[in-house]
Image (cartoon, rainbow, N blue to C red):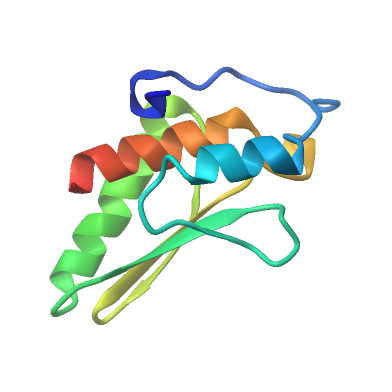
Length: 109
């Protein structure tokens, strides 16, 4: 499964979240992403030396989100950038979240 080669599909309300077994399978295809305690989002914290690299990472995550029309929550400060994905329309995780995470992984190595 190469999620980084897939594209997000628009979803509207009523889209069901992925079942836990599928979430675990897709999480295994990612690098350093963590499942939230409530199981409704995934996040990765990137560490950097300095502020500028953290800002660049935030911009990269925003660029991926804009290209895929699936936007993450981004928090950053000196030495870190944290990116989180969830699908609000599903009130949980969908394939789109994992596609965007995989695309970001592919860009940062």
